Length: 391
Image (cartoon, rainbow, N blue to C red):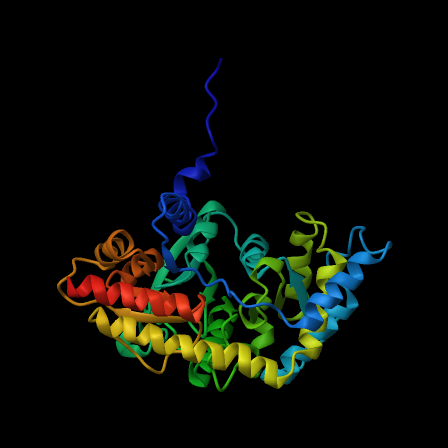
């Protein structure tokens, strides 16, 4: 039989770190080791009761199981527009300026396909979400990293970026509030990003799923005058509405950009189940301030205090002003890198914490603790780490 080989693009990426590592954790759990995972940003709480009930009601109807419009239902687009007005003060035309997505991760693919030709460049933060890099490589784009540093509040160094070679750059990925560092959105940063995009003809894409988590002042890049002309914002229900497995996200921009993205998307998928779309609209429309406060402040605040104690026990330092559902901390000098610490914790304390190197070279000396575990499991993780460090 003639040898069959994979596409060349497979050589540009590796299996996603969490995909690989979670198989190892599952094996350890099967051996009875009871690993506590503080690694993944997958909310462990339920969506609101109204959201679940709407899904059930719709699923029982005989006429709701067919293909749906790729552009999304009117109900969902209108609810998304209302969400942007309520939380960010941004007015969005639901008919032309919003594209519902099967999760914002899908949006990274569609946006790259719509704007970047093979061989063209994209600006990617270091540290940053690994998918910005991996999907760009799969699609033949060239990665140009820009540094985020703790001494600059994890904001872009615009002087460094302006002095780099920007020829051939089509997209710039940003992510505020930032993951993994917890650096919050700054109005000045947003204004400079819009100015940068306009002057260089580069589309800035801000990934904004963490703005409601432990954050008193949610912001959108699109609140800056002129941002819609040259920017795109991704958002998601995964974090803010406890719906990671539902795969509901959106991109928001001007009608031309949205039409280009829809042109790609309509050739790839056939729309989201109507029940999920209507339930998502229900969540946007009915989740009260009380629900939001309990889910996105009270619960995560309790867990954040435990995560801070874990950081202290490990001798790590962290910025207490960071927001979002993770805690990002710098490891002590006695460790060669973050993976040395996280592997020690996994195999000796039976606690899985994320090493920062997976987010880029600037994360090599950092770890990330997820707040997406029950309070009692986080408390048990703290006790295990205390016992381990005292041995």
